[in-house]
Length: 297
Image (tube, rainbow, N blue to C red; front, side, top):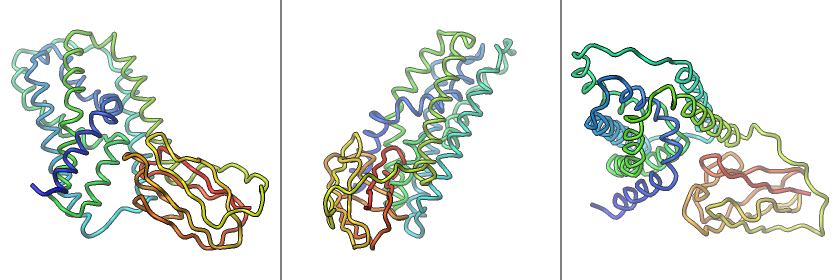
């Protein structure tokens, strides 16, 4: 196994454990809820089949994305549309989940069909991505290798597996009527967060007004990328002259890729901007979660 594949596999596991646990279980847990909360869906093995189907679909998808990445890379605007669409999909699914009533017990023969349904539902979770999932998919695309892309996506599924297993354990002991409303509200919140990240990434939010100039301005500005965002989040530069923006990477995370002036940049890097008019230039991380501004005055 090459160093790149090993690094992407470990990074995917870390992303799943640290960032994907809450968001993925909130946005995709409804599929698992529909499986294990039936009268014949209380078999613990069904959760294993669900996770197996999820692993298979994500690994295959990662390989295809890695192969695609060697040919084409998705621009920020396309990723923004995908995030908004994913958020709206999650919200619609959450509303349907909250309106769904308790199902009557099915016939015993349905217990066998549930074993085929479990991996299919697990595989279908790739069609309802959370914001972190889309970020890992972008990593798979940028790898330019089917093996590396598959490793990143497979690692992500492994990282989120404990949360899904815990959710399946809880669902087998809590009735749908007591949990559906809470799960629906959590999923709606996650959907709004994902859609908002897409709007932010697309630059469709108004920026703040530029503050008065405090001195002659700067032709070179330095910004530090941390796990909590960009520091300082707002800097001032001189309008009408070329400006160099020096991005220094402090922590590995979402902020390691920045979208600025309509292009993606992997940090650390120095971005050279042409002369700008007075006003604000917004830049965001690759997932649209963290924002910064350069005020030209």
